Image 1 (cartoon, rainbow, N blue to C red):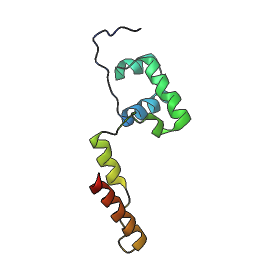
Image 2: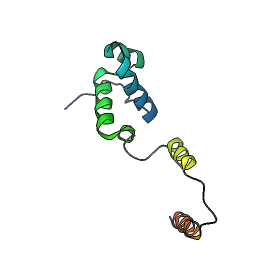
Image 3: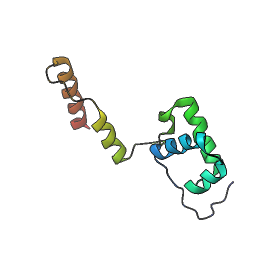
Image 4: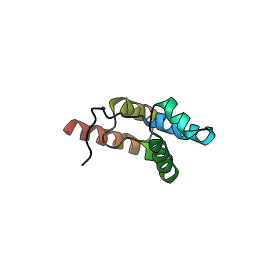
Length: 101
């Protein structure tokens, strides 16, 4: 079993990971990029592999999204079309479910 060395586990945003993967493609040295970003080389390769197999969504954190990510996702949703009765009813049903929770 691995020992903890007292280091706190760091968490990186999806945007940070995607930026790092993009920079890997043009970096002269992966070792230098890893030092600049203060991450391990193997982490960069791990992110790159996940990005290649699943796109940017594969770089999302595991688990419940943070409050900031949830707000960002909500803001990016298309505005509600109040002229469409089916869409309005869907939104009402969604809000009633939330109230029931």
